[in-house]
Length: 471
Image 1 (cartoon, helix red, strand yellow):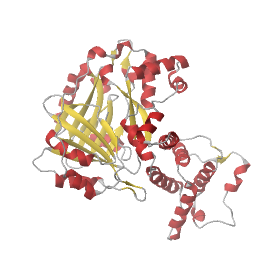
Image 2: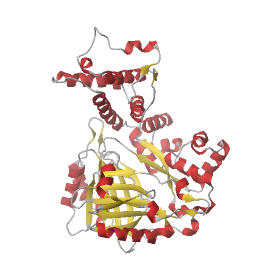
Image 3: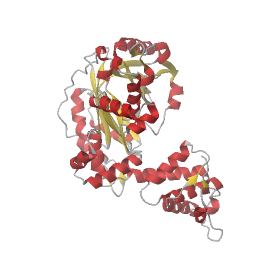
Image 4: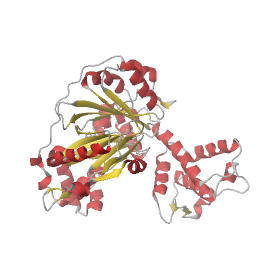
């Protein structure tokens, strides 16, 4: 990371004093001391000059600005505690940076009484205005405004857009591979989840042109020689949910395993799964201009972009950007979608249930902090349907949750539940995959789908940024 330099002499007081130096400060490397100076300067509203702001520098700045309280004071206290244990010879830049990440993640995950209901309702209905969200969550407008700012500044809440497949001639599919030696990669693959163990499983979500669904099925069939099982399902948009039952202001996020076990015993109404409607190829995006597909990409990234923000990424005029933004949202070509990421909810669990057991699972599942529920339908056997449930849990609690589910669910039921070890999340660029000249989606299986070694893709997948919402 680029080391910061002072912009003015007003920051001279940040320099370490020779006569009044703490034990831990003697152990800091020069670059580690520079990070500490950076934190203090930005907390006090100062400015720092850097030769180049790399990704790590930007992340550090974001953590300092979004931290509630004094990160600098707590960081100094923490370093002093560690050095007092003895045996420490040097504290490097990376040591300090990682401790800042740990402190920031704990601080960011510790939500206030106003942030909890605001987050729940923002995830439930991201279409609502701030005034409407304040009314729904029972908060005053100023409380809602502060909650929204803190949640968005810290990255906990992000309101983005989601393509409406039915209006774009796209089919959302889920590919499941068991014990694969090869997996798929390419611009149409949106998300991938990796389950380690026996069997190893890969879940891949793709948005593909609906008239090409049969060709994708053929691609998946070709992978059966490289895996113990390969199937492809149509995936509904599903619903993400937030619940604060297992949040305690003192202890943070802790899964109450006894309560969860008892909730699994309450049972629930049997679920009836309808057909997932296949999108119509007649509604393909032939009527969209090149400017409009560029605006789509901008809104997917961040829904509340102003016309001025869109201009910077699309090179459109401000009036044109405003009109096209309004059109895409009004006609629901881009649907609002809230994404929530709470750092201390680091474990991911994904499960598939038949309808006769999914209703019994729902009461307990609905109490988990972050969940996503969807429906899948086998494209080769449409009568075969499943309920897909995934959850983000307090770090370290995933295995215990799975153990309890296996103890409480009768072995006569057909279901599977897995701990997700790593994942990849990307977004298909409409502007790069829609051919305006031919008025159709680009498609060439040999060009847009690569069969890549499982080991290679598993190593590339992130163990900390695992997608939860598969839509």
